[in-house]
Image (cartoon, helix red, strand yellow):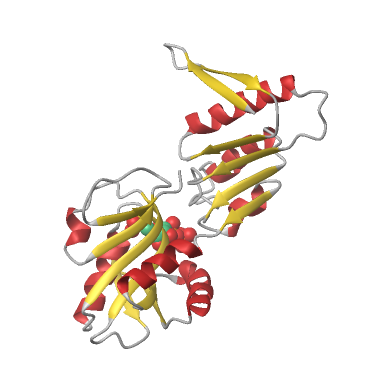
Length: 252
Ligand SMILES: O=P(O)(O)OC[C@H]1O[C@H](OP(=O)(O)OP(=O)(O)O)[C@H](O)[C@@H]1O
């Protein structure tokens, strides 16, 4: 099965199916354009395979747009993940695979969805560094980090971020003195959460602090995070990064 995509000058996308067969679309999925591209391909495929009931369709998204907006943050605001997942459901794929979603809400809202595990990337990072202590940065990350630590038979130190009078305060529940630490989480947006945590880990005696995130946005660059983090490990689910400070595992 193969297809082509044509973009008109005004941005419109048209998909054409070249050869028949099972459909598998792999995209970052981190833009609305990616989702519309998938919808065009699926529409063309459906038309061309109307009589072929046994053919299957799979959509793989490596960095689902809106995954952090997994609730209505304010009664006057849109619930963006619900809008996005409704659109995905309207395409009617037999299977939708999502790499390391921010929370289970994405999987609950998307029909026929399964998670692509990020364990292998954390495992590679863990062995490359040489068995560091894992650190989970907040309550949201604890459950996943706990399961990863068990699978790696690694030590895990939970930490938490609370705001006191608007100022972020980090609490670390364990001894990191003279230890190398690996913070593990799903997404770096600006990276401030990890910069502050790394500073506190070093204040408490950590010798080195590394960061693993599956989805590496780093929307403000690396200057700030470089001040307290020694190296970043991530996938290229969101974008390709050319920087010696970053090791990327290619997923797309
Ligand atoms: O790079 P930064 O800008 O510091 O952001 C990164 C943090 O934000 C996300 O959590 P979020 O606060 O969305 O999680 P929540 O579901 O607990 O609100 C993500 O899981 C990281 O922990």
